[in-house]
Amino acid sequence: MEYSDNPRKVYGRVDIIYSDSQINDDIVPASNSLAQISHPEEVFKGYLLPTLKACVMDGNALMDGTFQMLDESCVVGWWSKSRCNENGNFLGTKPYLELSFVQRPVISWLILGDVKLNQYPVDFTITYYTDDVEIMTENITDNNNIEVKLEPRIDDITRIRLTIAKWNTPNACAKILKFYDRLYESYQGDAIEMFEVSEELGSVELNYNITSDVMTVSIYNHNRKFDKGYLRTLMMLDRKLIPYIGIEKDGFIEYTKLGTFYSDEWQISQDSQWVKCSATDNLMRLQNKTYIGFPFTENVSIKEIAEDIVTCLGLNSDGYIISESLADVIIPRAYMPKCSYWDALQEIANSALCRIYVDRLDRIVIANEDGTVKQSDVNISSENMFSASSNISLTEFANEVKVEYSEVLVSEDIMTVAQTQITLTGLESVVLSLDFSSEIADAFVESSNPYIKISNIKSGVNAGEVTVANTNTQNQTAIIKVTGNAISANTMTVKARDEDSIKQFGVTEYSHPTTGFVQSYEHANAIAFKLLQKLRPGEGVVTAVWRGDCKLDLTDEYTYADRFGDNKQLVCEHNRFVYNGGFRQETRGRKK
Picture 1 (cartoon, rainbow, N blue to C red):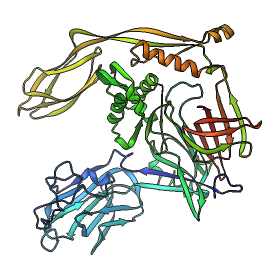
Picture 2 (cartoon, rainbow, N blue to C red; picture 1 turned 180 degrees about the vertical axis):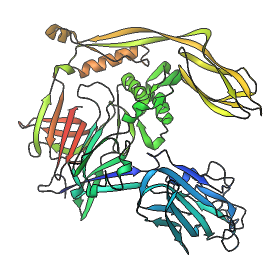
Picture 3 (tube, one colour; picture 1 turned 90 degrees about the vertical axis):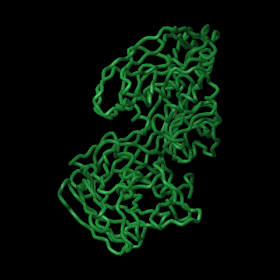
Picture 4 (cartoon, rainbow, N blue to C red; picture 1 turned 90 degrees about the horizontal axis):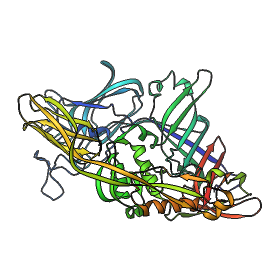
């Protein structure tokens, strides 16, 4: 079956992850036995394989070239300090691993040993606690599986302990790579009243403001589980929602993921059987996260600045896409003050006329809209369309565009922008955050006490972060001082005008948001003329409500034919998917 078939059957599904290692930062590991190299915090991070097949001096490693030496950079999970005897038994005090977390139900729990060494617990005990009260204990004997899945199905648990009595390998320490299971439920069929998902490149007004995608869903409150049952303690912000639309193909339902969203409101009414949740994508969360800023740097590209922002967020290369063409936009004297990550990305969008959004694979996309678009085979016409409107509004029209640019100056004089006194106990180390009184280039941090050392300096132009360590065993006091060269900027304005349009309509002005990354007449003029072309009379968007096809993604080019047979090639910049047993889609497109 295809989406274009009539009749057709479309399926909806929403997975809600109530607890996992990404959205829960309250998980605390503990153990009574830690090897010299042991990373108990890795047992809830989702790792399925250790970094290497570890070579240890316990008689179990062979000189066959397959074993490698460990170091602190390796993913190993929890290794106990104590070793079992030649029969695999741990004598005396048994090693244990424990996780504490916010109160939650435990439907299932996973225990994974070392796959590469083929080592795992044979006899062990799992104890479940609510605070200090023991709720349940499971004793497992004669296990012969590397991975064990338990299904206790109990509520209100805050702590779980694994105690190992016997190991499958003689003279070895315990090795647990995974001791955790996310809590999630999948809702489909009668469990969903409806859900709605919106994805967008930018607003209809053609500005370059960042927009965050949103979704809402209504879920059946079976047995009052959301307000009286086992989920009641998890109705909080930042629960992860993943919506899907599916269609049957060859006897199976083929689902298309529409993104990942994070709950920002739950509505649980005692007068209704339905629970409503609204959620936003990952971009909205960046409004509450602080970027320390970009240090004063000469001749750096917008792509490099964007990469600094997303890597400071903690994203790896799989978590973002940045247009290669942004490497050609060079900023002579780039810097950015301390701000939210949202505002930092907005500076990128304004300076290079970028679209910034989160795609369906949860990647932050920073895209120059001059890039090539993907041609889809989607056709929207009177045959599959319920309604359509063409929006050519005066808010999208301008015949004079103003763009500001700045000349950045750096003083030769050195000024002090931060100074604070700190006292550290013997061998104490702290991370110190500092806000500067002025914006500076080339921040220099110094300590007045030779015993108090400065390291790990991270500095923008008006804020910084350093590690301050006392290398002496006695208490030490020091003045920490930050100096640098003052930065200032002179601002000028470029105007681009459509004289013919001005003679016909008079002046309609548009002012582009000011950004410190536009630092030359040529850069400002290029932005102004590009905007002037896009804001010509007669341009606009076409919005259609139609039967829908999930393969039409943002930036895809598609064919639109109105009721009078007029064909256009449009680029998709907004989709709204609505599932309520049936399925429809609202799509907004603009001429390429």
